[in-house]
Image 1 (spheres, one colour):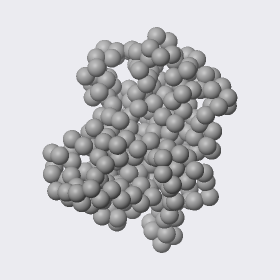
Image 2 (cartoon, rainbow, N blue to C red; image 1 turned 180 degrees about the horizontal axis):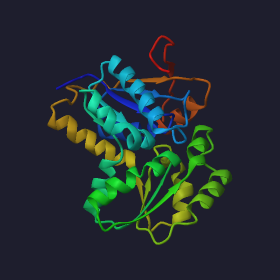
Image 3 (cartoon, rainbow, N blue to C red; image 1 turned 135 degrees about the horizontal axis):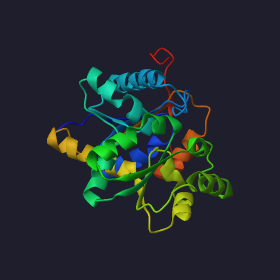
Image 4 (cartoon, one colour; image 1 turned 90 degrees about the vertical axis):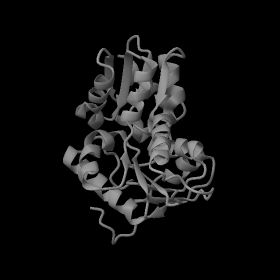
Length: 265
């Protein structure tokens, strides 16, 4: 048993949607969240830049004595996870594989994926899904503006509806739609409205939480008691993070600024 916190890393506020599911599944656990808001968005950056930024995030979380790290960012998972896992001995989980395992178990074949331009360009979702479901019919769409809508606090309303509708127009006859960026669950009302109720919306945070819970049990890392502390750090606090995060978690969030002497570039 281990009372150290779980680290959660994202490029901005989107990883809070994953944190919400982690807290719901494991209320006894404590968490340290890092949002690299100064470099958001990651989706337009090169693979090497994303790897370096993710390494910085992982090292910051390790400095906070975490026992496991969740890369709660679709772009960082698809571009950097495999490299990061080779470098650090700590258990590190991304958001792609747990979701692919779920869809494999549900025998879904007609699958849509929406994500950032970087994630779609990397073909990370296509690789993992076709590995698990070789006969899947995949439709992938890059939606670069959606994460920025969430960061601006515009996840509800007419603007969100119009942008989502425009991006999702090409989708045809899907059974499930993966929200391949952790910002996207905050747009779920607009997304469901566009694809229809018969399409299962896949919140990658839910399936990531299931995988984390399983790993903690297997490695005997679960917390002994209900301590449930949360620390939130950002690389830039001049943003709407606190408002969006507070709304999402249903409690007031006051993020701290990462100190300048840390190794962030």
